[in-house]
Amino acid sequence: MKKYILLTLIVLAAASAVPAQDDNETDAQFWNETKLYFPSFTKTGDDGKKKKVATPFIMGTLRIGQNFRHFVSERIGVGVDIPLNKYLKFTPSYYYIAEQPVRNAKSFEHRLRFEITAENKWKNFSLSNRSRVEYRIRHSRGDSVRYRNKVKLKVPIRSNDEEIFSVFAATEPFYDFRANEFSRNELSGGIEKKFNKNASAEFFYMLQNNTGPRLRSVNIVGVNLKFTID
Image (tube, rainbow, N blue to C red; front, side, top):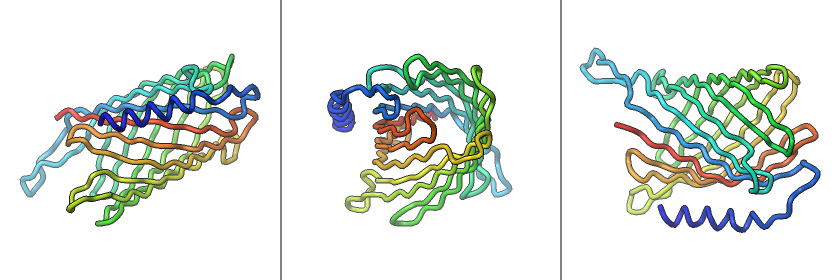
């Protein structure tokens, strides 16, 4: 765990030397999302075995941008994972978001998210597809609806048949129904590490490309944390 944290700090220290951009077209950011899962609600099936019917969670997000100099986004939310079958799960969630992506441009919004994730695992890789609809209730601008589709390929790295960590690559285009256009695409890659049954982390790099006059390109490093309470 310590070596992964050290690696993240080295990347951040090197990136902080990047000169500030004055045109608000590019940025370098650090992202963190932390999720805490609570004990699942279960039911007993006809076979006498307990099955998960819902797993609630809370989540918090912190993003440092403007070339790692200022907080640009703070988020907090709640949600629940509902397994539909072996391969599908449905996840409704709510986020409250406060942002300042560029100087002197604050925004606040409530965000309702509804997503279905399909995933299949094979011996040497797994493939998932997350389809998400977001309804954005924005304070300073009109409400909007976005559709996001994230495809992720993950490959486990093993030693003596024991998984050490996984490497992954993902792409996620955004379609904005208010603007009637694809407004963003996020390409990412990194590693996932499971420390024990209750804790895991995802270390990643992401390139975010946007339409519009501000922040057309964002280079992102980050770490996402997941914890589970039995």
